Image (tube, rainbow, N blue to C red; front, top):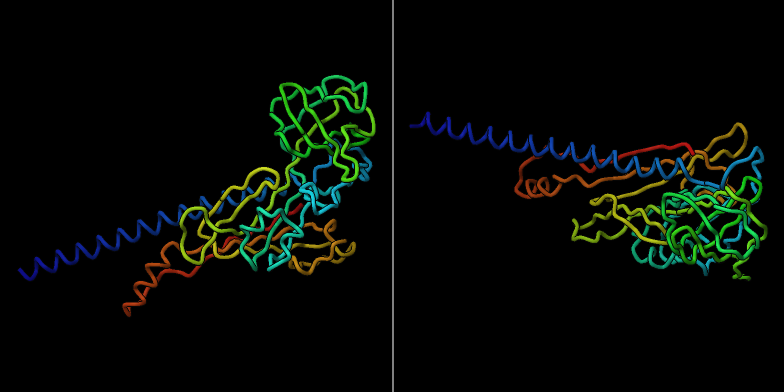
Length: 307
């Protein structure tokens, strides 16, 4: 009988070990999938950032740089940089982000802003006859109402707001803060490129669902439209930038160390996302009973991207 009890206890022990092993393997697969997902988000946005319209051999593409008024959401579109960042401390967020974002951002955490990611692309269907004319366009993907849009013909470009969008036409408004007219500065010819631009911010914010105490969600926020949680149970998010300060000097800097005139010199973006271990709660429970645990501490994904 004693031998039978030993066999039963041994079977229960091995069953518990197998169950825990399978759970750990499942969590590892989840982590790998989540890590790849976050990588794809960052890579796609950074790879396409800084779009300025159809290109010429002239790097000084003359798109008007009109967004400088922080009272307007349009200030979040800049043609002189691809990325921007800041450390969200009490009181400094509202000067850099919309109010709806600042309400959600975790205090004392980094924010990464990626400018001018091309979305829907249309082409002018016929020559413009007057500068305030409705744009008649052709293209497969819908340009969203309220979006900032770039019209360019490889010689000149202008930014405007899509006031209304209908099948094959866009009603527009210019974005000069002192002159909200419907007129462009020039006429554009058939085939001119019309591209919806998106600027997004990545940051830590409160999880919509009830989450673990002390953890947050990583958000990707389209500043003019919507925010989405791309990963939950995050405990830290850090951003550093590689700055080309001279032809032969390259430096890594935290967001708080970069001067405003250096954002156009950014060549690489370093991102670190620290994830709460899903088994950490079990570890704390075991430790409270005086036993030991082999559960690892919080882990981090680290990525570096060239832009």
